[in-house]
Image 1 (cartoon, rainbow, N blue to C red):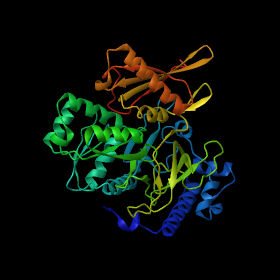
Image 2: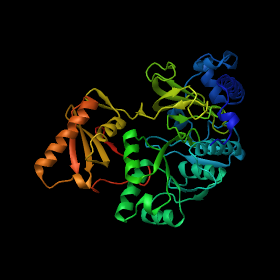
Image 3: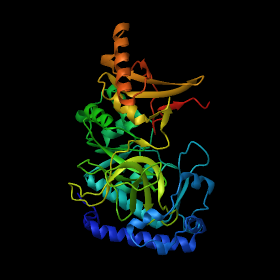
Image 4: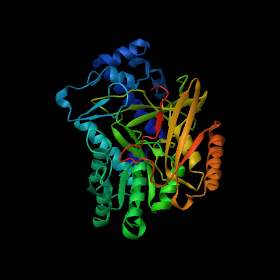
Length: 432
């Protein structure tokens, strides 16, 4: 299902010409009217006249999150405060948060992107969409809310928490689609089982739009097998606007609206632009943002950009599933470890449940990693020898994928914490 067929299926060369024209106009406008961006371009001796083709975008300097914090709250904005109609604030854990302002046009393009995304997975006027992302400073709730209303769906603004009540409303209102974090939907599945609710038998739920935290294909398989619901990945950050882009029904990468955003993948170390299909750090230029422009912003998410036309017919670029972040990488005994790698390894063990925690400590000069893992109820045993064998098997799987010896602690079902919003699965205590 297409929301805007002409744009979504635009010929590749036409799309690239559109992107170049948008970037050229953006850079020209920012250089003449915004001191921050002019200073950045001058610092690398690049001006609007140097951008003569789409490939020349690589001449422009990168933007980083630290610059947002250094210029907090509104020093980087490109419109007067009277043009701002909404603010959102990121949930940053260090330094100042990121404050994002929106003009009416910014909200319109955000909603347009989500309308295309939801349409691509078949969400429309026959659906009721339960938004179980947080509402407020976090962008997830309101973003999905307006996108769902745009495509004609009925919206249940459930936000997070009160899971039993959410499940009751899901049944009472014949909810067909839910949008939330993967970890919260996993928690919802567990609570539904405790309440005797079978999603297939007792609800009309058929789709889940899951994002705001990394999750693996293994986790998708677990979710679908335990709920009977088809799960789709959604991508976005507060700096972009919020959640914006999803997979289509093909589920072969996340479609990026090419007339709204220009996406690159770079080598995290050298900053060189990678070829299509090569995995690196994502860099985004937002082509239509007014209040808070982004030019070559280093998102820190690791992915690859695919430039081939999708089997669904859309010509927009796609990014592969986010495999981690270049700045949440754990270095343990000299080895680079991403939480997503640990999740992938755990999902290969059928006895492992959906909840885990990662703890890193330091004993003198030696780093230690402990992975706490919940065991499925049917696999949990009172026999010590069975648990020792299972623990040894999980440790072996982790070492195979990480090339690192990791200690595993087995936990009973329900013993590890659950999360209403983003999961916080890593505790690095080495700096405490």
